[in-house]
Length: 538
Image (cartoon, rainbow, N blue to C red; front, side, top):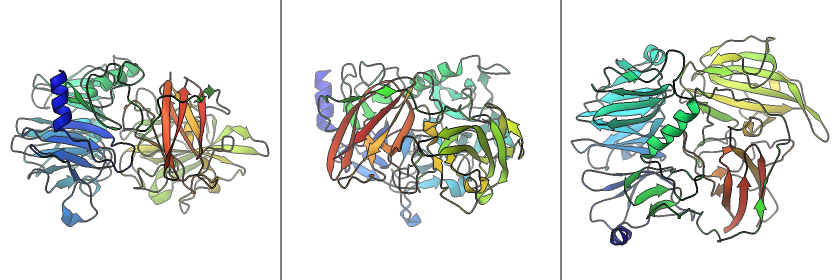
């Protein structure tokens, strides 16, 4: 084993790191020609060809003549019998290369429409001459390298599918796709299914009303299945294995490629000192909790790639809410008691509901009205003036308006004025009183919250700074770093934070951020049901 490890270290060079915080590897695969393909968070694809001493980087490009990949967030690969190389992305479809990665043909928003964008983690499977692409909207399959497609989806997805329906599964939201003894297996929100005939017919391990397996257990089991093996990155059970293995001793991590046995090798953020005396600890949250707008039996996880204040690595405008990626038709629930003050089309026709809540927030100098707003629905089920209770179904998930996939966009506003126009206005891209919903929604059972501030050398907020070192379970979209708010985002009126994130697993983490060209580190302890506050200063 030692000789094998030495050989690996000598033959596999480190990935080029331009940030100083490592390269976040989302997936690793070995092609039939022994080339190593690495998918990353925001840095595209790295390929190590047989006999090569350096990595080749493949990135997306706005120049269509470049025939590049569609997106730099890559977490799935597949290899065909005729040398095809398939890749899948977090949020912008997939593609194939027939010449070893020199040129690509892509299926993204322009080809797919506002669905099929989110490929499941390691969600590409080749079986004989057929390629299967598992996504949040079902499975697409082709046997002619994408000239024609068929779809495997549920009853709702079948009604809107542009391609011929190959078969149906209980739920279109696919979280895992794989082969087990040549049988095609699919995990979706209603449990696992498998097919012995290439997806024509399915054996479904579900009941007619709900999954026979507790949804929380399904999520844990899917995590292990996606990873390929139930091992952690270290002996600490709080550190899950985020990335699958391609051999016994090599795996991807948030900081590059890791070699050796996982036992006893907890990974730390690059450059972190061995010990930090100060530890930030959790306290009770300071204001009201709301419930989740999506049930646990559906897809209750907040999209990690585009959280409140995030720009997804500089690709988008600072986000004004949080996303819950769910299939079309998923019930949307009111997060608290209140009265519906808006129900209809808003920005670019997004079907929208707004609720003024009974709860009020009192600060040192004001008493604020609280509103929640729900965007992109396919159908609205409440009317203005209607009173709702927490948990009432108010709409169905969709992709209306400015959306690239089926999802719920949720906002929480704390306003000094009882004015719906200040909350929902189709002409206003940056509402004046919205705050981070992750500080208002109760975190998932057994998890905590983290919030804080990052100051530059002039004692000003550091906009869009990246905080590394936190590890989160990859339940849906991958998490890489916390991004501080930009000038168009608003802090909570109680916390005055520069960033906040919930659903964090308990444990101690060393966090790092670059301020003025230098790395600054803090140690934090996350506790279930509590909020940990941390500040970074030069």
